[in-house]
Image (cartoon, rainbow, N blue to C red; front, side, top):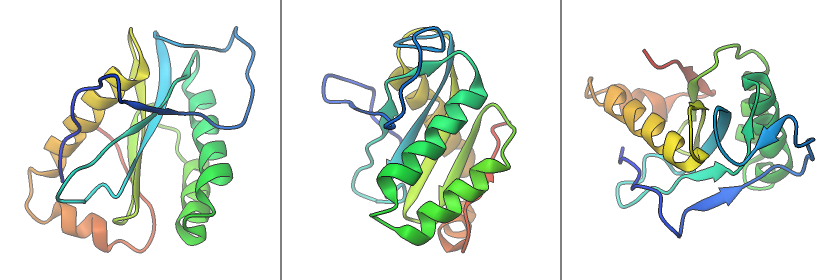
Length: 153
């Protein structure tokens, strides 16, 4: 697994199709946001895509991530998108990474200040470091037949 590069002018931002009142979301922290990484185990390069929204409550961020997966990723892989949406319904943790085999990784994280890309990159790269503490971890995650939710220590 590779770490993400620092966000720059080419950083990809994404959004669900849902609208939210300005009182519940903003462009920067403090708050909660989410990201996704297509092909997280690619050995050449990985690129995160970040929600440009920062939510006042982590539950709203989780709901927006579920909406994004259901609306935008179902056409790419129906099995994993359906399983991911179902798995997210049971997640109560404020910060987590969910891995869907070699297909996708998603993260929900706190944005203390600034934009979601900076906070998300730091959170995801810390998680990659944690995964590499045991050599077999990446292979176990890739071989899983259902989404795996991991909490950061």
